[in-house]
Structures are given as C-alpha cells and as structure tokens.
Length: 139
View 1 (cartoon, rainbow, N blue to C red):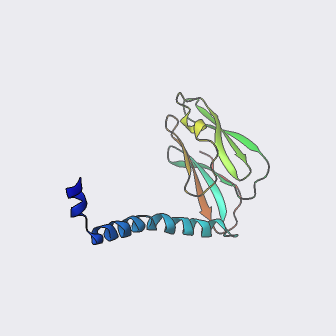
View 2: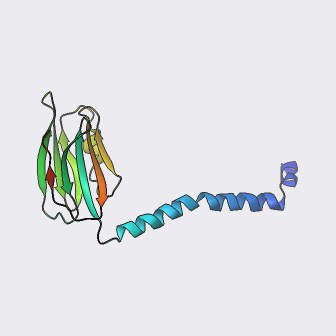
View 3: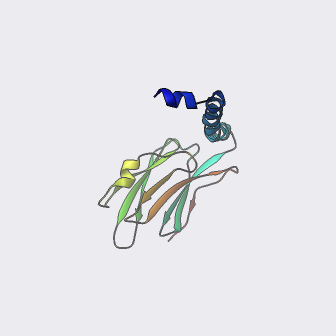
C-alpha cells in the first residue's frame, strides 16, 4: 500500500481532477441548452402518433387544458387509448400483453417517446416554433 502511494505524483492528481471536471461538461452544456429551450415563449410542443411508421395524428400539446381521450386502432383489432391532459400525453390503456407503453406514463418534453412494440405504436414529442393546429391524418 505504501508503494502505491509513492508512485502517485502531484501532477497525476491534478490531471485526474481536470478529467473528472471535464466529464461533467456535456451535462452542463445540455442542461443550459434545455433550460433556454424551456423558457422559449414561441415553442409549441406537438405529439406525433405513428403506427407502422405512418403518422396517424398530430396533437398540439402546448396550451391544452382540457382532458381528451381517443382510441388508436391497429390492424388485427388491437387498440390503444391515448389521453391528453395539461400539456402532457400518455397511453392510458392498451390490450398488449406487456403494458410497457401504459407504464411509461405522461410525457411532455421534446424528444420523449412512448413505444408500444406489440402494436408498433410510437408517440413522440416534437418542438415547433410556429403556432400550429391539430392535424388529423387518416390511415
């Protein structure tokens, strides 16, 4: 043990300390950018709902105060119930066996996703800087 301590030099400690501090740099930059985006008053969050890589529905989340529910039906009779409430969206219920999409809960920030693999359903939050209306695309 004493031999190991003799091998460590002052510059070794300085270099390790600098490397540890640098390792936190990406987290700091990401946090600062995310905080700036959260304060952007022109940002509009949109939930894009896709089934089999085809967009089924786009929903504007920003400013949604009332609770809305609707069903997304897949081929084969499968169904997911989607709920939009207070600028957030979630899969309220699904008839898939694993229920991972339901357990994910509400999402509201750009980049967050909910995935139901058995039904090939993806809900992704995207950010847009231009005001938009709810767009419904039939599948």
